[in-house]
Length: 277
Image (cartoon, rainbow, N blue to C red; front, side, top):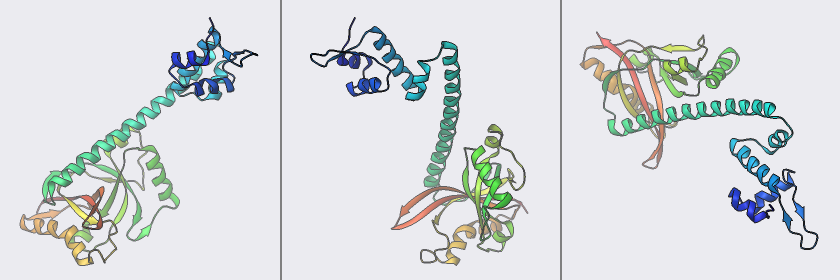
């Protein structure tokens, strides 16, 4: 049976330009009518076009398909097995992105509902590494290598602030920045944990969502003293009023960007570990 370009286009549900592209790549070999220039395809062309469509949907490029058409089934099987591993990796990456997105959505919803109120809860445990420490960029040498490796090995990360315990207690606005991942995820992805990667312990904590400037050094937006009060003030007052003691560094998880009142802000989920004094 003979088929024309439109027949193949309708059977495969692709455009006629796609059929012509299959021809240009050498996958189809139609007969050309010398009188009218029309091309006709035989059953073999149809079957090969079907396989091209299937292989393209799987993700093979035209070069792969050309090779598949020159190989036996066993060799084709090996190509399919490689493609399956590639797809599994993509699916794993997509699932990690979905988990991260879901976590971000939860934090955003809680940030909107919380309205800056302090609440008590046990914080999660994290592994983290800093790229900015007490005013200095730290992305060179051993720390830089560990930072890049951490990002590569763990697809589910958060960007964080770390406020040292002593700076919180003395209201010194000094902080570090880095990336962190829940201890569950570092285990799930087999992330290598060794110094300079640090551990943030699971502990009872005071928590609140704070709206902070996107650039915390921009005193035109908010003064240094007002920013210190915004980050530390309510926590320290709560600690005093409830006879608590700060037991470790405060971590701030960056939740999301927000444009409000003609200014650029970010919402940060602050966790301050405490215990009864």
